[in-house]
Image 1 (spheres, rainbow, N blue to C red):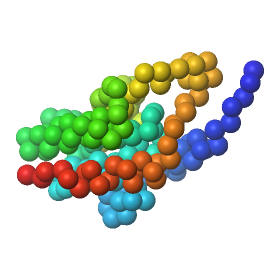
Image 2 (image 1 turned 30 degrees about the horizontal axis):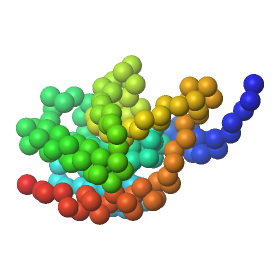
Image 3 (image 1 turned 45 degrees about the horizontal axis):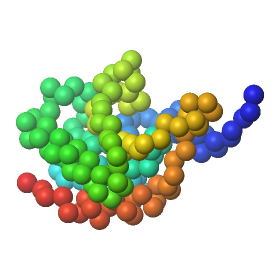
Image 4 (image 1 turned 90 degrees about the vertical axis):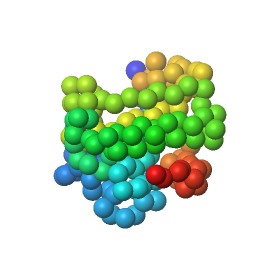
Length: 164
């Protein structure tokens, strides 16, 4: 069997073993948005890049309220969450020329949530051929752009988001 080494995955494994608390509560409190890949924030929601993306531009829209249950969100939080999701999709279509978009939530550990106590919406840009032979045969995903470049590309666009 051929082996493909992915040493950057070690960071993910070590960080998930050592994390205490909720990443979606702790990272915004650090007030270091660039280092934490937070592209946008207001008083109700924020957009953060996935540090271990499925594709370049993989974003998550997150309410500040720590809850795993959508029913706990106010109408205002719910509207802001989905307005920002829509805006994020438009940015990825415009700036990254996404040919398709996956939008989803994994509610609960058994549903695939890595962070199951704080709901969040995943937005993943998709392209023709992005599920080519590498993930199918080699169980390896190729991410074509460094996170810092993606951040620099997307951050100015979120500065244009119309806040209520």
